[in-house]
Length: 108
Image 1 (cartoon, one colour):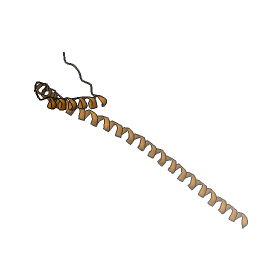
Image 2: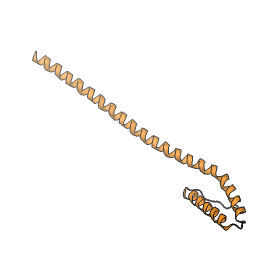
Image 3: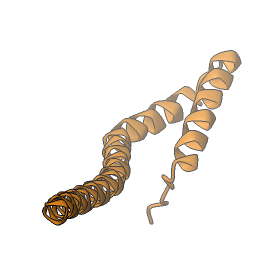
Image 4: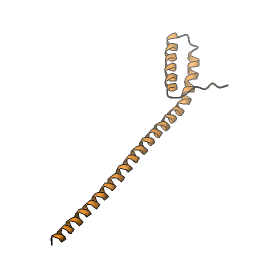
């Protein structure tokens, strides 16, 4: 009778060990999935920012061309303070964009 109880306890323990093993396996798989998810979303986020930056830069190009034409006309003015203000804005804008990777190309 004691042997039967021991055998039942042993099989319960083995069953619990097997369940524990399965749960650990599930946990490790979920953890690995979550780590992959974090890596993938971080990569997607970086790609989104790159794409957004490119879109912003491209949309600024016609505005920069217009600003250059306006600056060219304003530089003919006799109002030195206006010219200094526009030169300052022009310089800041171009330096900021250059810092973000946009480079001016001279047309031949």
